[in-house]
Amino acid sequence: MEAIFNVSQPFPDSALEWLAKKGEVDMRTVKVVEWLLKLRNFKVLYLGRWQSAIDEQQIEVESLEFLKGLKKMKKLRLLSLQGISWINELPNSITTLNHLRVLDLKSCFNLEKLPQGIGSLKRLTHLDVSGCYMLNGMPKSVSALTELRVLKGFVTGNSSLNDLKGLKKLRKLSINTSNHNFPNETDLRVLQDLGEHGKLRNLTIAWGAEEVKQPSSSEWNIIRQASKNISKQISKKFTKQRNQFGYLMLELPKELEKLEMECLPKEKLPLWLNPSKLINLKRLYIRGGKLADLGNESWNAEVV
Image 1 (cartoon, helix red, strand yellow):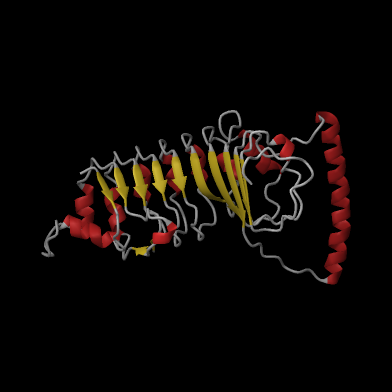
Image 2 (tube, helix red, strand yellow):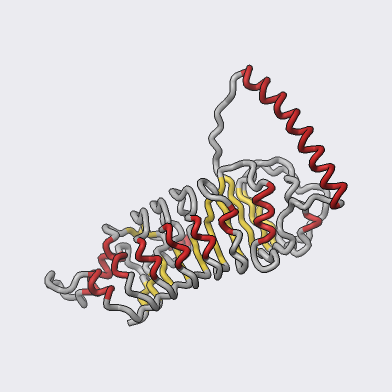
């Protein structure tokens, strides 16, 4: 046996137990973990949801015990746990799957963290943790995934885009952030360098709610004065950059073909979003947020 696909089972761990017993009811038959450990030629294990949103059904597991049975599947190329509830973490044994190309954890709502050693998956090309709302950061070892082409659901909470600097083959990236000032100067420089020669093609940024403590009136006065001073300093810095380079370098990668922004907290186009520089942009998606206009410059996008 080389592959298992979950077509309609809401409890995949129970279905695996049934398979391990070959349909027999006899409780003396082999345990799931012991059975999985024998399947060393496995290439595809698709236990998660694959149906469209219209056909979505609840999928959950009673125990994470079955995951321990994957550590001997050295030929495994695709592992999908998409949409399975009650998976709050993955065992470290996942990091020994040397041939794994695709790790699909999309919409695992209870997933709180990824294994610190995920960087050991040197052949991984696709990592999807989008919809994993309990994640508050990514392991730093993600920078070692040098073959990664697609990364969905990168979280900036306790992580920095600096962790992605080594991903020279990255083509598609989606980011979740609660920082309303994202991206900053450092973030933009990292984005420009992603992919071979800065050829990131597909970028999605989703801004979430940001907790803000309301300052007192005296604190407001201090903030206003500090803001004026900072604004002057920034203005001088930007003017110097303009004089030196002729234009600001802090922009999105010019090779982008698709840009998606969800809940952008700005009413006007931010400085880093320059339509005239996105000469290869074909698709622009804006969902929610406060953006009120697209500026005075023309866009090259074919689809808005």
